[in-house]
Image (tube, rainbow, N blue to C red):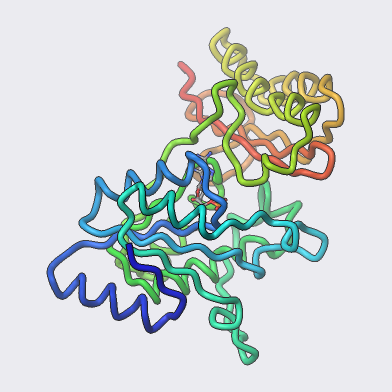
Length: 283
Ligand code: AMP
């Protein structure tokens, strides 16, 4: 596996792969790998001849009071995990390279960030769209894989790729969970033992939503209220949002009829966790 820290280095490598008629898949990450990340690399392997993984803790997507400085890093461990998955190249740029002093060009979407995480993390999706657009230009992959754990991010990247005519297929991959249901996240390492138990409330509230929808519940408000009640019965939880909504537009739905996204963000102590599930209720 090759490791590159410069834009020119990874560009040259990808261009020679493409000159040899090889297809290239990009897996953008912020590192500190868990099974969720590794599942994206495996998916990339299936889809393309070469897999490039980027590791970059993107300062532009963190708010003032967020965890940029605390974000976990272990580059050597990440590299050996990527190597074991058969990744061909990792790209680990510095912040100075990605955002030189003169930097002033951002990518911003007008509607998708007006919902869910965009409301509690102003500027977050501007940072995400900008860094992903940059990575797309730098790597010029044929495909790129994103996890549906960050459902809103996946939707936003798909929209951006289409709007800005990136000739890149965007693939979504399922959420990888711990055995007890907690969605894997690099941020799970922040949790104390007690908080880890309370963190189960996210996936459990989605299980409750599934049961209610199975039983024929049509009222999204009631669904959200019952989920909130379950979450708040766990110590140390504070709800950011619990939103049943349209999976395409993220707009509120009046009744549960067609496909439904239920997305939530919950603070557990100082850690903010997200989860979601898509339902296809019978009409
Ligand atoms: P991150 O390093 O957290 O920015 O995540 C990098 C990529 O991994 C994103 O496309 C995430 O959606 C994806 N990802 C993170 N956690 C999971 C998970 N539990 N299951 C599947 N994909 C994930």
